[in-house]
Length: 396
Image (cartoon, rainbow, N blue to C red):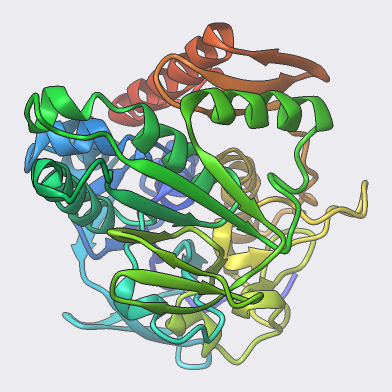
């Protein structure tokens, strides 16, 4: 194996992938190599729960239910935390440039997640909300609460209109949550609950999910009052309206962008092989080609499973699975031992569909309604408990 210059292991990003790599490597090496975890915030965000927009609106500035303080987790693992946003990565000089200074590395794990991809649609970045980050979800929750509080003054019987762009799991979960939130309880008895439109675009609704799950999700959304508009992508977003490819103009009080993700700018700028959306193309070991000791994990990579030929989805479940293999391979690289290839085996998927409802597929068995919603809650609680204690979750 190629040699790697001496230096600490630096992990960029404290999301699902980054935190898991830090915990797993520290557990195996027990202080043999310094480990530094870098993130722009001092908390680990439970990003898969950010669709809970009604709960966020009720919680206001108290976001403890969606975060885990990193100091609480890392102190017991001997991992150093450094606060900073990644501006660029110099692979040749083995240096990360942060807004708070430079950080040298001997080994590197790039786990920076993803950012919203607007595909060049005019006005999309300026005039839509997003829930890919906690700050974005909080802004949306605050805006929805304000819209609902003002809804009693709307002319005639008009209700607020909320447009959710994107028919994947994020858009679906968010649309269902907005439609089923008890807004009169949160915003006042004269509040008019919103009309919610899910703009699924030209791609099939919940593309890639099992057909029976999709059928149940569609029916539950219909029962919740979500109106689905399919077949046409958004071509322009302006204050108060969204325009579709067929010329349809949809007036709305708020638009939320859930139409896709891409790699962050610092990742797209790397001198390395890239796939769609600027994601990194990695070796089967999850190491960056030509850069020994540099690994990439989670949403930042495009990885086709050699066993199935399918692209591994950009989900928390996949990120956790990748992180465990990347951690083992980092330890092997440090010790000069053989590394293993990553293969992905999905345990199941569950899509939340509003108050007490969900649809899922577990080992080819479709579940829906309250049993699926219960499973979704159990998985989320299991992960949060494990993250807080620095353990490995049992259910994901």
